[in-house]
Image (cartoon, rainbow, N blue to C red; front, side, top):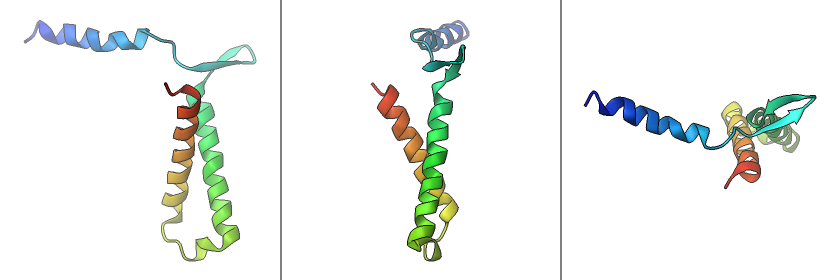
Length: 86
């Protein structure tokens, strides 16, 4: 069992070198794509919160923080899936 553990560990890390991490070149430096998707998700959460306040849904909806955060996470994951999903 001791001799198999390093082989399994190294075999599982081999997938990391197969492709590069998704990134954009901005201002001469590499900018990770997950940060861009996180910013898009934050904007989605702010838009959801604004829409709840404007429509009056914030008066009746409990747990608004969790609803806004889950909508923002859904927007971020959706943006990641649309751009980098295979």
